[in-house]
Image (cartoon, rainbow, N blue to C red; front, side, top):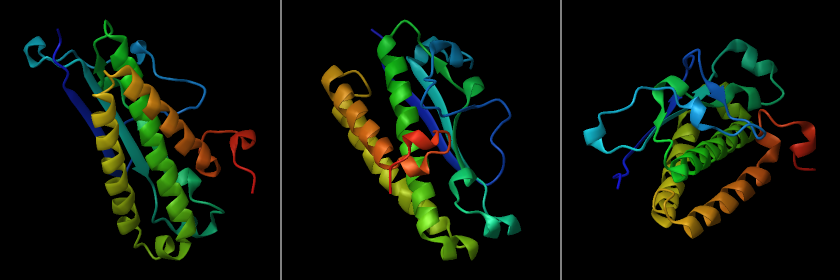
Length: 185
């Protein structure tokens, strides 16, 4: 039986995320073929290494002319830094759900940036990022506990539903969704 260890890197950076990345998409879910990183030492017992990141590009003069800040936060997955034990389907489902949860964090950050335009334009938006990250960490911990890192089918299904509902409620802040997926005002 494989011992399950997980390394998930979720970072907020002001510079570019590495060139080869997959941006979150409602219509394209991760597959085992997306995990291109090197296999860890088998003695480590890891069954999943998933590298997600938020790229936040703010602080430029042209930000003043943006109608929204939705385009300034990108949720991405790094194939080259990710590996999966493809023999265990629960690992892929768990990774997909983590990517969706990371998308919630991206949308929540976009929402708060848009609601605090004056703060963002003054360059003092780091506390907004920190607040969203703190909330994400709490939600992530609940998800991991309730789903046993994706190994408890009922807990996993419950969280997939909860995260989907959160994403739907923040539809206006989806960077990659078409207008038909956004919430009516």
